[in-house]
Image (cartoon, rainbow, N blue to C red):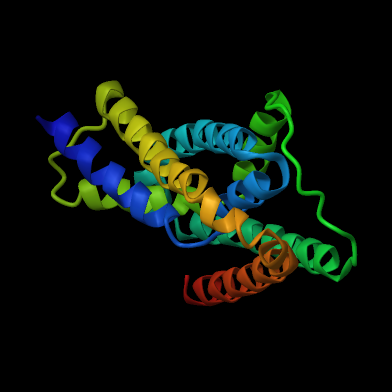
Length: 207
């Protein structure tokens, strides 16, 4: 019963957390536009595998991180550096006046690795899942044994993948406006990184 409750809450939290436009889901959408729907699905699968690991790490470190403000601040600082690098990258990509090759390619392992790489650069899921794991243990009655850890990680993985899959399913709507999407997506990603940079700075200053 405890595993089921933990699974459902974590699944919904992970799904809701990925639905808003972000680094990973926008990458999935861009891949669908540029390389086809199946490659976008492979990116989502790769990202889901990383989320599985991130969620497992988060639930194992939840108590430790909440009891050590220094560790929490260091994680935020690491995220700040990553977001700064990504902001510069996407802005440079947006400034490049190159045509987007809109064609479908055969799906391959490269798309899975792309999903793994992009999801690995997205460090926010770790503190997000740490917060969820901590909230589930507010009463102090839950002992995070391996069955609960596994249930938590699987729920986070499946919830995130379900949200990413929506972007693959909705690819047809994006596909109809491929040129517009391709033109502004990098600017959107750069702006998103700036927002995340501001959030990270605020959290660091308040930590």
